[in-house]
Image (cartoon, rainbow, N blue to C red):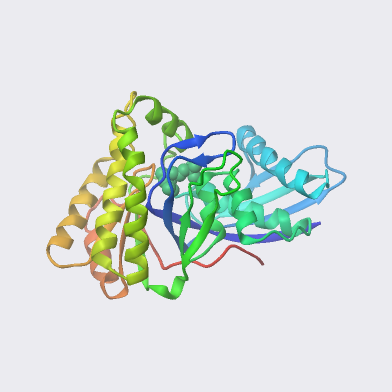
Length: 324
Ligand code: PMV
């Protein structure tokens, strides 16, 4: 009973921040993301009747106990669906830095969901896999699919209408992303903890919720019409609103560093000079610049001119999570 799966990371163009239910990981707002071809998690799982607990190896090392427990709780869900109680040996690797705002939990839980279900011969639909992956990490629900993906916030208390769906295939639009790594340190406050703080303390939280449906609508329209200027507007607005929530929380959550801010100004400056490019930033200091194929070299050249940028990862749009 074993299987190996790959799932790609994704970056939200319309962000989610806040949950309506923490146990089931139900987001307070919908979100829209693009899948990232060059960033993925590969996971092998073996269910074995001889094991006395679940094991988790990340890279080539045993994972920290809290990570192992998080994975084990997730596998309990799969075990309860399948009726097979065996523990598992999970070996997983990311081809990108973990825990630095590059969404390793999204590709990680999506790959785990696909691998575990395949190993136990569970034939779940894309929607069911997305609901399962969501319970590992909110953004993992989106990593089940490639291309452009929308996560529904849903209204049902049991989360049965809270899953991701593909809006458009990867070949809909040849968008490229340049990820500028500004720091390789793990972030100090994880997303779930950060969301709880913002919900309780940010004076902007209710407005964030109230303005989210319009961002989703505009982003969907921008993707379907390939309207770059509309996509730039909505993606930067959503990103800055999310960070304004984080920054206005008590204690304040400042995920940016000085280089993050330099890159924001650089990208806005390029756009002012006629280069179609926009930025987005998750709960970390890395800046992701998005542009069409013709502008990749120009944008990259400008980004690497900022000395302290440690590395730039270039990616196109990724494919569905899959068994390999
Ligand atoms: O996947 P989670 O629950 O850790 O939250 C991710 C939140 C952001 O990456 C900041 C935004 C998003 O929509 O991906």
